[in-house]
Image (cartoon, rainbow, N blue to C red; front, side, top):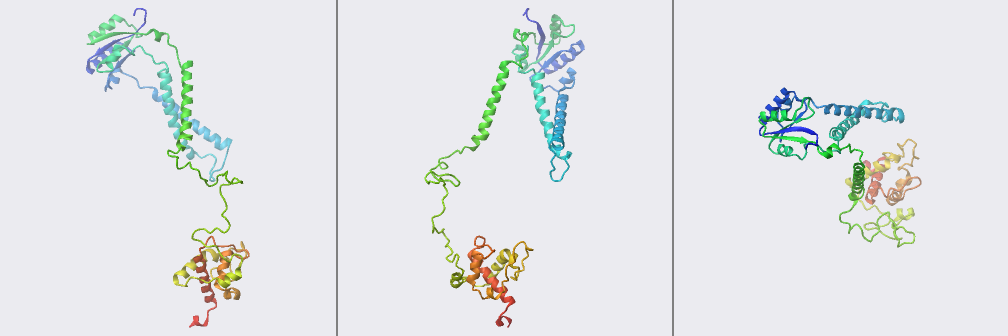
Length: 379
């Protein structure tokens, strides 16, 4: 012990009231460098110790303001100087849009750098030794006792006087706390090779795990025996066929289920001759025909079939549906034109079902009868 420098003299008290009274006596005695250790937070103890407000709040404020200023300058430089870009007709400098980013950067900077400051500046991490650690004094105050440690660097410190002082204050036990040999030789380890290697290794492991989780693990199917089968997926290659394409065109003559191919393709005369409108012109059918006509036909043929397109010259005007040729054309002929198209008119087979096309034919007959009524219609 004699070869080790003294760090402090520490005393154990059995209750909190004695401890606070002892603190007041220590202040009256003029000791400045001392600390109090309790197993739980004690209200009024900081006031009794006359502790000053922590300066850590100022550290947080400085880092927070620095983050806000950095975020503002960075966004201003990008938006106004380096890459000015008009977004939504707004000016390059627009403070309201900066506020959310500045707020987030302020909070992040204040929180992260305060922790870093605490670890590396206040606590001197990775150095973590202290004379009080692993002492009998610390074991007792960590359980159910209260302790005061007066450091030896106080002005006018005298070992025997301090021990006697504690006994007069009612201390249960008094300890002499000495520096450990390792602590005396302890140097800052922040640039120690082992510590740096540990940080690098930790960074590599964390980066590897993060990459594996985000890029591999999340995309792994938990049960893949149905996903991985011998089959041809759409848009994939296939080695069975010489051309390597997995998707094949249907065999000629293939008929899809529930559909019959149009038998009069390219043969309007036969269509007009053989096709018969299967629908009865009921109110429901005429209503359907009107709806589809106004949607698909009226933009070019006009609402009443006069060929008065409302496309304003963007598409050639079609002939009127009230001409003798169309009026005398059989229903099958009109159906064929709607199905296959004619001249610049495209086919509407993919947009309209067969029933809808036949319903349009009925509605065209209604329009024609409205312009050229039969004598029976006028009675």
